[in-house]
Image (cartoon, rainbow, N blue to C red):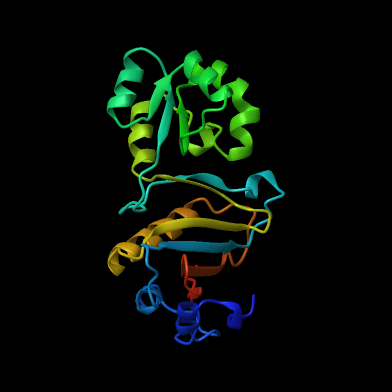
Length: 230
């Protein structure tokens, strides 16, 4: 989309960006904070281009991460567990908790939640929901930390904004870093935490440059390129 078709605030913001420059993390956050603001509290979005081949199983990265300062958004979490554990999950902030009855409710069309976590013993119920939860990215999985014996801990973390991530077919990872109302230092620390984590899961097969490109943007702002430290 050409800039002349963008909104006035976007066009004002793009004038502040040197398109060929990759800014340091503090510089990028400072520039982002100076863009005209929307009437709502915009999300700050991160996009990271990795030098990987997602078609190869060992390079198709996925996982979950809790940001030091959260994302500024509370998530609705359901927990597949029973008995006392279900009571504890509800007390920890779960929107709903249960076993077969919860699975039946979801199978019948109830999807008013953002995340589902499950105790391993409940996969006999959850496994039947693949066609419902899978296409919406809600299917619990051990790799993302959503199938775990510590269901209560998972409820607390995901309700507070713990993020699941996975590479797209182009080798990119997208995730929210917080809100534009956050002070810059909190956004800097969230970003540095993500980049440190991505470096720890670098596939052994990747040689040379690993992180190719980093871009930050608000919901309604232009993107800002960030200098990459390997």
